[in-house]
Length: 267
Image 1 (cartoon, rainbow, N blue to C red):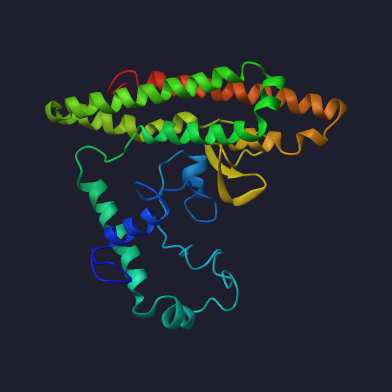
Image 2: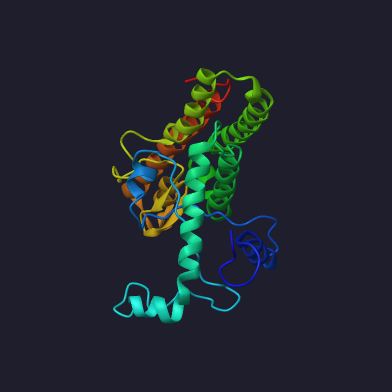
């Protein structure tokens, strides 16, 4: 696939940019809610993808300032942002080839161990700002950490076993394993939704209540912790009870996902 700004391949261009930031592989971020995939990802638990060519942070520190203004016109795109539509073509090629790759693969090319790794990173982010508060409210918070660690181990073992056995799998078993990989996202759905937000049911990755554009890891927990130090009396007590309940829910979901991956094609 040709590069969009220079000679060579798009992969080389992508890798060169990320090597500048001392990354060993291209960055893949979690989804925000500012697009049509939101109900699929955050309500139905269906794996979703968005593809963008974003601002070169080496040149510009912020997103382009005319975003969602009257200046965001076809002329702006054609003459200034993407002359020749090279970036637009590159993005379309990636999307098309990615979809074809998924459709043509016997085994879904989904790196399952990355899911709990990202969860663990998100939980570390929550702990960084709120660890003492969480432990003082609910000492059993450590059980959630243990459950995420267990899920991480299970996912790695599942992936290793799958790579070992996939060559000998019959079509029915292979279909079952693919279903197993696809459906694991739905294990993280809360039927009643996140606290105070029935329209968002994904307990691990969803936008924050206070920032719909950015995705958050463990958004329900972050929402409940938001400005908790300003609460007093019964309002504070009610919030702490909600936090305890939500931590218990999250722990149960992590344990269920780990159990789901205990065996191949356990559907």
